[in-house]
Amino acid sequence: MTETPGAGTATTGAARAHARSQAGTVVDCMPLLPPPEGALWEETVAGGGYAHLAVPAGAELALTDRDGDACAHLLLFVTGRPWERLNTADTAKVQWNAYLGVGSLLLSDQGRVLATVVADSSGRHDTLAGTSTAARNTARYGDGTPQGRSPAGRELFKLAAAKQGLTPRDLPPSVSFFHGIRVAADGSLRSTGSAGPGARVVLRAEQPLTVLLANTAHPLDPRPEFHCTPLHLRAVPGVPTAADDPLAAATPERGRAFLNTRTLGAR
Image (cartoon, rainbow, N blue to C red; front, side, top):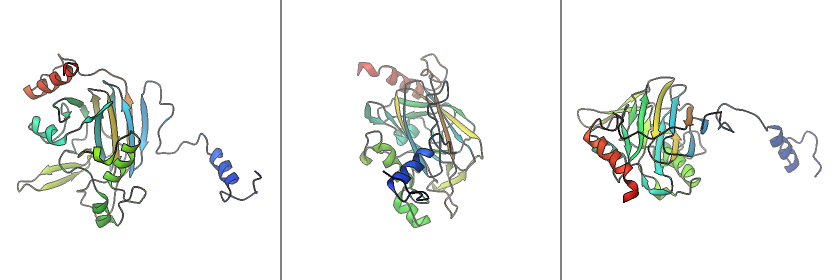
């Protein structure tokens, strides 16, 4: 195939040459391949982007709101048993608390621990509202498509799920990190916004997990314009919470959830 000088990307040959010339280019938002030494995965997810990865039991997943306007909508599935997945209602109900912080457990609907919050410098999270939909973002911003300027979380989750062999029917309600929601006295949900740049949350995987992330504006963000900035994601090896860890025995409900998890092989 003969390339035409100055053809840009107008021909297949020119497009190939252009693509190959980009090899090795590092941009602001992308996975680092191979991961840096000591990491299982490291990536900066663009505002309006998504990520998906599988981590072993014990891995610690650090999420950082780099510029202060990320919103990490999160779903968890047990790798190899995707029917066991995050249940936000049980996460709040079993622990008698809808507000996530250090020591909070992310639970499945089978009463087992999927992940534990082991560090949190944000304190602005949400277990109640879920993520945005295409209809909602289209009504608010004029566009809710995943390739558009204000992608909906549900649409981003569909793409992430497909790349892990999951379908839209597999997607339960999600939790969100870095955009706070509180329940007002009249029962309405009130946005408390972001904690600012650099806020960080660390989750410890208590089972091997498939992780889906959608970094997009919270559905109750009161601002009329779409806002979402990059989210940094880093996974490193670790070990699950030990039976004698004070965190595991801090409440009867936590003790039972960890017992359910440790005895999984017997059921």
